[in-house]
Image (cartoon, rainbow over all chains, first blue to last red; front, side, top):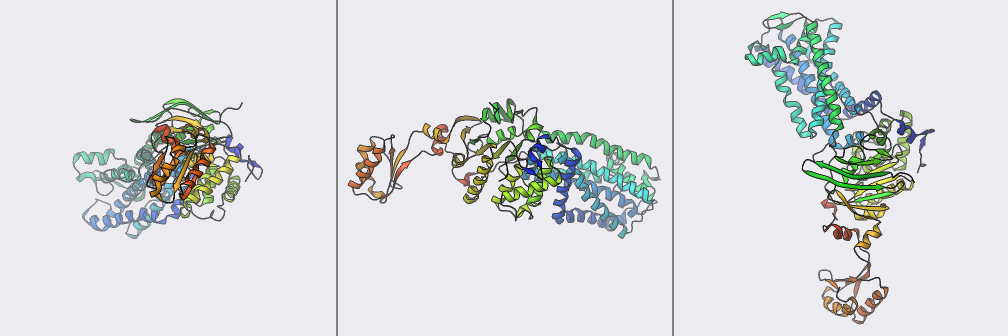
Length: 283
Length: 330
C-alpha cells in the first residue's frame, strides 16, 4: 500500500493531477499513440483497408477501363488520381467506426472523466487515422505504377497533389467522427458511415467523365462535388491536365485552392460540431 | 467541519419520456463510504454520471470535492476516479500501457506516469500480467486494472459503479479486499451496487434507491431494524414432521408461527427474548424431533428492500443486465 499522497520519484501525483488543465497537443498525441498501437496490433484492419482499393484499381483499369475513353489522356492516368481520392475518402469512414467502438467499450467514459483536454480524444483519433490513410496512399501509388500509371509531375507537384488529397481526407475524418458520436452504435455507424460515400464518389469525375451523365448529375459532378475538385487537383499536379467538359485544362491554382477551401470549410464546421457532440454524450 | 466529499440536492434527469432521477439527494461525508443500493433502473448509474460530469442534470445542484458539477467540471475531473460497470480499459493495450495512458491524460509527465503505473500494477497484483494485452485478462483482472486506472492520481473521491457486477464470488471477494484498502487510505467513496451483501460489507452508510430517488438511508443495522428484529428459524431433518413441530412450538411462538412445508422450516419472531430460543430447544427436544438447523436470523438487506419497495431486489446474478456506457443505447 502506498501512502495517502503517493509520490513517484518525489512527485506528488495528486498535486500534479489537481493542477492539470489539459493540453490539446499533449493529450492528442497520447491518444493518437494509443490508436496507432491498436492499429499495429490488429493488422487485419490494415489488410482490409488496403484490399478494397486495390480491387477497385484492378476493376476499373482492366474491366471498365477499356470501354472508357478520355480524350488526350491515357485512362490509367485519369483514373489513378481520382481513385486515390476515393480510397482516402472511404478510408475516413474508419474514423466513424473507431469512435463508435470506443463508445461501446466504455473507454470514452474513461476519457471524459479525466482532466484531459476535451477535444484531444477526437483529434488524436482523426490524426492517427491519417496514418492508415497514408499507408493506403503508398499502396495505391505502388499499385498504380504497376498497372501502368506514369505521373509526369515534378516531385514538388506530386507532393502537393498528395498533400491536397490527405488534407481533404483529414477533413472527412472529422465528418466521420461527428457521425460516430451522433449515431454511437457500431452497426448503425458501419452503414451510415459508408452509404453516402458511394453516390458522393461515383457522381463525380473519379471514374468517368461526367459529360455522359444526366444533366442534374452532371451538374453535381462537375460544379458542386468537392471530390471532383480534389481529383482534378491531383490530376493536374500528377499528369499536367484534367478534363473540363470535352477539353483538357491545365489550371492548377483554382483546383488546389478550391480543394483546400473545401477541406478547411468542412473542418471549420465539423471540429466544433464534434466538440459539441462530445460534450453532450451523456445526455 | 469540512464540506462533504459529495453532495447532491434535488437532482432530476430525464431521457425522453423516462425520468431516471426524480429529485435525488445524497451526501457522502469526507472519508466515508456511501453505498447506493438499488435494483436495475433505479437511477444509480445516472446519478454517478452526473456526479462525475459525464452527464448534466436537468434540475438540481451537486458538488463534488467542493466544486459545482455544472460549472467546475474540470476541477472535479482532476480530483475524482471512476470505475464503471464495464471495465473501461483498452483491450489491445497492455495493462501497463493502459495505466500509463490514463496517468498521462491526468497530467503526469511520462516518467512519473510509468513509475506510477508500475506501483499500481504491483499493488493490484498485476505486475506479471502488466506486459500482456488486456484482452487476455480474466474478468477479475480487468476489474482490478480498471480500478487501478481510476486510482492513478490518488483521487479525493472515488466512484465505484457496480464494481463487482458479473464477477464470480472469489473475484468479488478479492476486489472487496482491494476496495477496503482504498477506503483505509481515507478516500471518500460512492459505491453503487445491486448486491445487498456488498453494501453491507463495504459501506459505512447505505442509501436505498428506487425509481430515481432515495427511499431510506442508514447503516446496515439501522435498515435491518426497520424490518423488525431477529427471527428464530428451525429446520427439521424430517419435513413430514412439520405438524408435530408446529404443535410443540405453538405456545412459544404465539400466533406468529410461519411454516414452510417445502423445506421443513418453521420461523417466528424472537421478540428480543433470548429465553425463547432456549424454550424452543427444550420443546423440540421433548417432542423428540431431529433438527438440521436452529438459530437466530438477522433480517437481510433483501428483506429491507422488500419492506421498503414492495419489490424483490435482484438477488441472482443471472438477472443482471449490465448497463451501457454513456455512448450506448439506453
